[in-house]
Image (cartoon, rainbow, N blue to C red; front, side):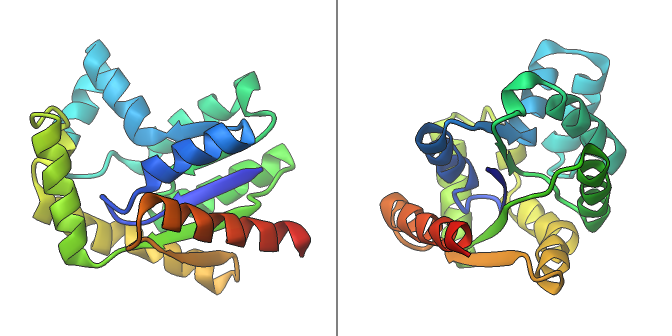
Length: 191
């Protein structure tokens, strides 16, 4: 199973991705986690990524595509994967399409978790308080949501136009959202 989870910061993509990992035995490919690990390691690309994330901006497409391509080469992705936080731009979505076509594979499902903006703000700010502000990209809620609207929301439109996108109402509990995701995945499997 190869999935993409889309949605704004605070929508619950990471939470739902982890649940799907546990349930289906596939790997979660979270670009945010990969970038934070690089930043923590203090590598040149990690320091550059940290500075960009601290401003609430997105890391450039070419860097993200390279990270994903290298990650898909690892054997643990052979049974499937969940892309969480990627693609974040239409250019990344187009590059992913080309990469998967080159590899002779496709995405099985693209799910967009939708949440009201006020709830998103509360979730992001709550997460920043819980972590003591250790995630630099949680510091500027307004900036992150504006960057999402401007650069990432068009990815959902890209997949919607291709007839591949399914929306999931993310306003319920973790369990309610999980049930909606499971229903979409069952429907795709039966199709």
